Image (cartoon, rainbow, N blue to C red; front, side, top):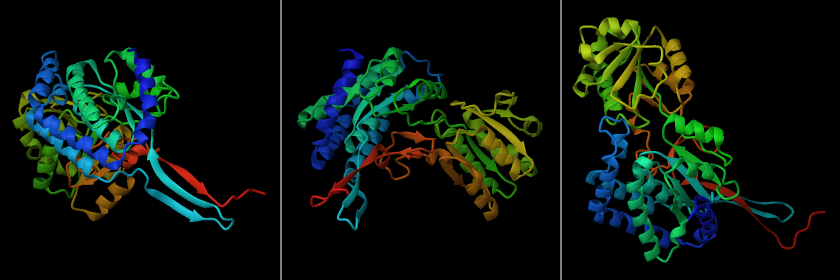
Length: 415
């Protein structure tokens, strides 16, 4: 079947999704959670076929990798989504007009949601669950790197749909070739919205070339500012977690900004990083302090392109500033508006940081690793939106809806 034919079938099945009631919807997701856990060996076998084609040193390897623990976590997320109230049909606004018009504004599905993503098979589960719970049809375009994993996951989804009497056409896995992405981006009238998830290059390509409306998810050039009043032990713990918990994810710390008055604490602040072999790319002031106080093989002077870069690796840029103004200016220049943080004991500085930093998620004394739909109590996420139209930050059930007006009267006509 051609890619275009798959998208047409997705469009045609959108009307079927409207007819799936809430209990049937929940049961599919709960069944899928059970089936995912029961199928761990098969999923890991398929995933290994993909992993065997990628060097373990590739920063994407961790994103591609499925484990028994991760699959159980996915199953837990599926159950969380199933047990959350679907926003479909929620009344957003209601009013009675003096002339007799009865107006009601209700949430409805977006329709057909296309997602282009790279080597992250968990996205296949997440996107289906969130789209299905909100009555949307999902058109999935994963990358070649995760093709075997995505096929195995989609097979489980189709089995759960069929066993519950629902058309498997409501989720389409397109071929992994780039040509399929082009067809998807040009599917005007068939696809309602397109969401890219992946590298900055992928996101830019979809934004620049798609004829279908795009909700832009952004790469994460994430900063944490350690200010003059910051607590060293707290900062050490938070910064270590933000950088090393999972380096391949978009909420991982990429740049430490430090007040010059705290340079004497820098070696202690980053010392735990050496245990994870984190390469420090330090500006002149930071390099001078760390030279001889951090492993030589893990310390380099920062080049001009060390800042504003999503490393997705065990690398951390360090920038020294003399005041809050410089810190805010540096973040504003290089931020991708994903997640930004401050370590401080000053309420004034915290308030100013919260007010002035333009990002989807702004933190104080907290690891940026929490920018995640599940961590925000949203069940799961379809992506982190860094734009300002329609949705911003983790996108889950409400963000996958639009609305329509319902108008009723007793034969009212307009003069």
